[in-house]
Every structure is written in C-alpha cells, then in structure tokens.
Image 1 (cartoon, helix red, strand yellow):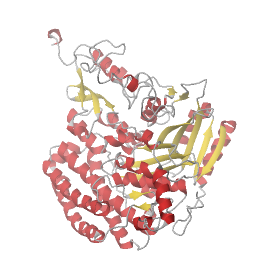
Image 2: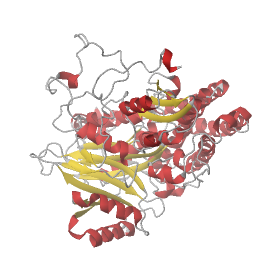
Image 3: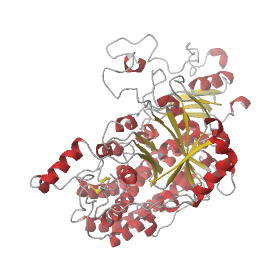
Image 4: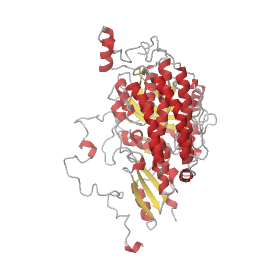
Amino acid sequence: MADQTQLENARPLATPVNPLAEATVALLTDRFGASVRSVVEHRGETTVVLAPTALVEACQALRDAPTLRYSLLEDITAVDWPEREPRYDIVYQLVSIETRASIRLKVQIGGEDDPDPEIASVMGVWPAANWFELELFDLFGIRFTGRDDLRRLLMPSDWAGHPLRKDYPLTGFALPDPHWGGQTPLDQPLPPGIGQLTLRTSDGSEQPNLNRRSEDDR
Amino acid sequence: MQLEDSARPTALDVEESVRLDERTRRDTMTINMGPQHPSTHGVLRLILTLDGETIIKAVPDIGYLHTGIEKTAEAKSYFKALVLTDRMDYLAPLANNYGYSLAVEKLLGIDVPARARVARVALVELQRIASHLVWLASSALDLGAQSVFLYCFRERELILDIFELCSGVRMMTSYIMPGGLQADLPPGFDAKVRAFLDLFPKRLSEYHDLLTNNRLWIDRTKGIAPISAADAVAFGCSGPTLRGSGVVYDVRKAFPYGGYEQFDFDIPVGSNGDVYDRYLIRMLEMEQSLRIIRQAMDALPEGPWQVADHKIVPPPKYEVSSNMEALIHHFKLYTEGYRPPAGEVYVRTESPKGELGFYMVSDGSAKPYRMHVRAPSFANLQALPKMVEGMLLADVVAAIGSIDIVLGEVDR
C-alpha cells in the first residue's frame, strides 16, 4: 500500500535516525538486559517491549538518567489482541522536556488463564499516570497494583464489563447481560433510594444529610 | 485544624471525602459543584470539601460526556473516523482533524502537497485564536466581566465565517482530512483572512485594555491557583497550563510537524504558574498565531491541495461520472476505504489546549485497530486538585477557566 501511494505529489516520509532513542535503548539493554524483549522501529518511532516485572524500575531509570531525563509521561493506553497470548499491550509514551528524547515502552500481559491482568502502577514515578491508569482499569479491566484507589473513571460506577475490550460489542443485542451494563432499563422502576442520594458510604448504607446540621452541632 | 491523614496525594473518591467530612465534621462540608454548573465549562462535577470557604480537597468526577469515540472509531474506516474527531474538542475541531490526519498520513507513509501543508498551518492557527477567544470570553464571564464575552464572540464569528467559506460549516468542518484538504481554499479566502489579520490586533489591544491592568481582574487572578513547574510536569500538564509555570515546552518547537519549523514565532512562557500567567500566555499566543498566519498567507503556494492518489482522497465529482477508474476509486473509498500497512504511530500536535496526541494502531485492515486520543484537557484537569487546595471556593471557578478544559475531549 505504501508503495502504491507514492505518486507524483506524495513522497515517503524521511525516517530520522534518532540518537536519543538509540541511547535510550542502549541504557535499557545495559541495565535490564534480558527484560528487554524486543525493539521495534516503525516510521521513525522506537518501541521497546519490556518484561512486566521490569517496568517500574525501567521507568524510574529513564526518568532519572541524566542524559535522557524522561520527565513527562504523555500517555498510557492499551491495545487488546484477543487472539494473541499475552493478550494486552500496555503502551507508555514518554518524552523529555529537557533533551527532547521520546520513546514508547510496551509491556504485554493477560491471556486466557489471566482474564483480569495486573501490572504495577507507575504513579510513584509520574503522578500523571493516575487518570490514565484509572481509564485503563475502567475500559480494559487492567488492574494496577501498588495503588488502592482503582475505580471507574468514565463509565458509571455500577457498569458491568470493559467497553474497549475487543469482545465487548459496539452495539446491538449482543451486549453482555445485564443489558446496558447493569443500569436499570428505562421502562422499569428504579430501585428505592436511587436518584435521591448523592453520597453513600463504601458499604452502601446511607449517610446522614451532611449539609443540615443538628441542634447539638451548634 | 487537624487534617494530617488527609494530606495524601492520591485522588480521593466520594467515600473518602465523606469519611474526611465525618472526621472533621464540625468544620467541614462536602458539596457538589456541577455537573450542571455553568462555570464548569460543560459537565464537570467537582466534589469539594470545604472548611468555611477554603478548599480542603477537590475531587473531579468526569465521564458525563463519555461518548465512546475510541470504540466507535474501531468500527469506521480511516476515511470516516475523521468526523468523530471534530466532536472531541468541539471548540477547536480543525486542530483535532489536523492531529488525526497527520497520524493517518504517518501510518500510510505519505506527505501532502505544499499548498495543503501551509494552508493547514494557517487554518489551525486561526482555530487556535478562535479557541482562545472562547476561553477568554467564558473565563472572563465566570469572573464577572460580561462585556468581554460579547466582544470575543464577535471576533470569533469572523473566524467561523472563514471556516464556513472554506467548508460550508461553521464548527464541525472536517476540512483537514488525511491526504490534504477536503476542497481547495475558496476564492476570497485570502482577502478574508487578511482583513481579519488587519482588524484583530486592534481588538486584541482592546481586550488588554479591558483586563490586563484591570484591578478587579488582577485581584481575582494574580496568585490564584498556582502550580509549580515541577508539579505541572509531574501531572502531565501541557500547553499554556504547563508554560504558565515557566516550562518552555511547545510541541510546535520541540517536535516540529507539518512544516512548523519554517515559521518564525515565539513561545510565551510565564513564571508564577497562576491564573494570571496562564491568561497572559494565551493572550500573547494569539499575537504569535497572527504572526504565523501572516507568514503562511504570504508563503501559500499554488498547486494541488490533496495527494494525487485517489485511493486515499475521493476523485473529483466530474470525473466520477465520466471516468471508469475514478468511479471505481470513488466506490472503493466510500465502501471499504484504504488499508495502511500494519504498524503503530503516535503523533503529537500542539492543540490550543495543549499536547494532543493520536496513538493509532493499524493491523493492515481498512479500519483503525485502535485509536487512542491523548487529550490535553484530560491530563491538565488532573492537576486541578493540586491547584485549588487551600484556595477559596470562588477561586475554583477562576482555576477551571484558566486551564481551559473541554469536556468533550476529557471524556471522549
């Protein structure tokens, strides 16, 4: 396809040889040797596939390396390959504000015998990971260890299933049971209490009205 | 007040806010701000724990505008997923189109003709001014400056007129597409843009007169909701939110794309990281955008505005009804689309809100296997609790305005 598109007005993009990406790969292979599973170069971008166990240490090393200083975590996302083992790619996009280096880290987790895969959180390295990890927990069902506040970020807290998994249907009657991710269908009455409470304790019991103070509070 | 347990850096959820409230019940109150609050710029809900009027904890609750754009894109061809991107940052749709188009072009390994490249820069910079005008209008309105709102929307309408001239649509234009532009720049585009370039500096100085040295404005913004450079980087901020804290990082300069390296412009950087600095940076950015647009209009070459490959861009309509090959291309493109070679790319662009990243994975089929959007507002909003802790309730409004969020992009 790429060759067919190189007609008169289209010229192929140059692939820059990035010395900083090279230095990053050298640092990772040096420090983590066998944990570096592969290095892929595509369209001038470098992807390093790491063993899941080495992730946090590698991130720490990249952030603190004086010649690289990957200070900014741009993005964390995941890709679901249901036919493949391990099933999920967790993708970390790093960039350095000081040195203009950029790299993509990838770990591969999950599989048939591991439906709710776990990976260590990198929040200790970059606090920016917070919402990106919550989003992945919500939409892919990836569990991040080392943090105790995993919750759904975008979907309602009582939603069933993880919508960005490939086996979650886009629409139609094949939606997982219960329909609409556990939400009450529109033609059925709401359970008592729903819609009247804004705050509940973690065990589900009702909170007293916090905004109205009783007499003995004064 | 004793709050030693509550100084944890992790985001609190509702239950934790309630527990905190229980512990210090005589002093604090937990209230909801939003999701229907006019100054939360959409459907952002904040759960605020207050001691009197002082914020102890702020917990953003997002997802009210989650539309599953990333999931939907997996079911569309590359050609059709373009229109989804307009709906994310609906105040800067061309900036989204641009990021998406660059990502798809990188997957395909093609480059666009010079006319498209320069026109895109001019359009995106116009879009940046339009987006900043909405930010200025709404954040000034939030703080009580009503006339600024009317003036800004008056000028924004001039830019939307230009977009309408190009594409027929004011907002959801999808005018920048993979492979170039949807259509050639129309006659009258040059005159309209130049008229705007002549008018806008005068109007911009009027806004400066209204706000920059205004005692009320300074009182409401200087020293409010500050964030240090180290914190801004750690929380993944980008765009004016990051540069307000003094970090020199603009994707247009750090990782030039789409020909930005050929333009001469400066990156305004603040020092205090407060609302006022973020305000000034966007005001100065509009001036820089004017510079870029002027250079782009002068350098705009004649020639094709799309790649010549009609497997990627639709053939002209008159050819479809007279040329067999064009008809086949037309049919193939609209029914199936094109198939980029398998691979993955991450393309970062500087949208008006900050760093907009498109992570696209192709498995060699005609639909994106995965499209992930790194939305600048999403990352910037993470820093809000850090900014408003210890501030007054009224300052939360100023802080939300100053990071310029669009919930369509946060929730996607």
